[in-house]
Length: 170
Image (spheres, rainbow, N blue to C red):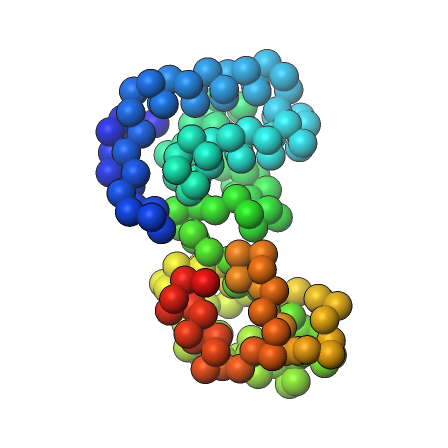
C-alpha cells in the first residue's frame, strides 16, 4: 500500500497517513487470523473496514494488499466486490442498477440507453464513473421504470432523468 498518495474521492483529495496505513495493515492481519479467507462475512467486514479507512472508496492497491495477505486471487475479491455495491472501489465509485422486470424494461429502453450513451455493458465500468448492472424486478412496478444509484431506488426514470442522475453523481 502506497503511503501519502493523493487519491480522489467524491469529497476531494484523500491522503492516508502513516498511522492510518499501519492501522489498516493491523486490521488486515487480524482478519487473516480470524479466517477471512474462508469466511465471507469476515471478508466483507474487512473490505468495509478498509473502505472506511480509505475515506469511503476502496482503492486498488488496498485490494491487492488484502488479496496477498489472505492468499486470495484478486479476481475473487473483485467478484465479491461486485456482489456488494455499497463497497465502492476507485474504479467505479458509483453503481447503477437498471430494473429489467416486465413493467420497467419496456423493451429494454433504459438499459439500451445506458449501453449506447455510456458505451458499457452490464457488469462493466463506464467512463462516467459507475458500474453498470441489470437486475430482476425491484418490486416497485407501479412507479417504474426503476433504477438504483448506489443502492437508492429512483422511480419513473426516463433517459433524460437518468443522464442528470449520472452527471450529478446521485
